[in-house]
Length: 291
Image 1 (cartoon, helix red, strand yellow):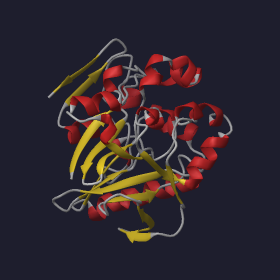
Image 2 (tube, helix red, strand yellow):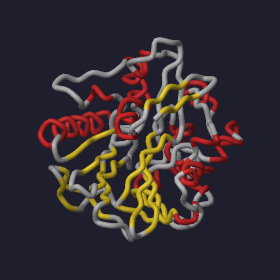
Image 3 (cartoon, helix red, strand yellow):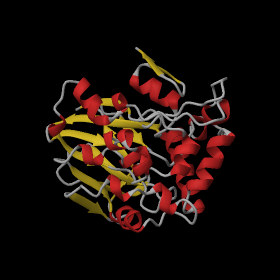
Image 4 (cartoon, one colour):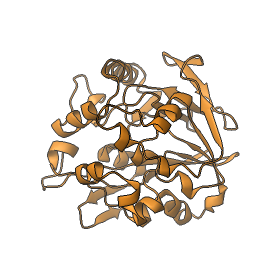
């Protein structure tokens, strides 16, 4: 399998270093880290970031609250469908999309791939359809118009499954190679998951999505997180105890099995740079990518 790391949406919240931990200016830089995997079963996307309809009609598709808070730049060239084409592939060959959760910045591109089967937990689909994502953000984080056009769903329970590095509810996915696994990590949302992908060399990548937001939360002996992202996680969580338990499990996995598993989240720009092999700079007026 060949794995491509994509940024499918730049957000530039006011706060600079207080969000991303490195920017000296007024605006920070966060990414929407997604994966495109070439497999014998066709192309597989892991999350989609923002889609073409989000770019074209943000006021219809996204909440004003999150447009103001996250300041997404919504560039057509950053959509997953545009990047699939840039890589030389036909978007119709995207056969499967694994969605860690249905937040607006992870599910926006689903309708850009009408031929794809969408894999997600049954619990996530249920609460997203009912917009039960928290007392304040529930009707803002989930935007059903982003997935109303999806016809082919594969829904998975959170319980049961197999053991994988101490996680005991890991599931294989229907129609996908056994090297791609769904790893339940609830707390950020009720049905939130990570996705584990085994590289050809045998090492695992674990895309932890929004189980954490900042590299320092799992990357060292001591916990570290910027104040902006610490506050954002609390705003978005539906179950603090589950989120913190899973965060600790990820920290232990990193400490005990770091040679076998590489963990990364959805929005940390440094983690994205390291895996994508490019530097990334963003401002509210433009983004610059240099290999």
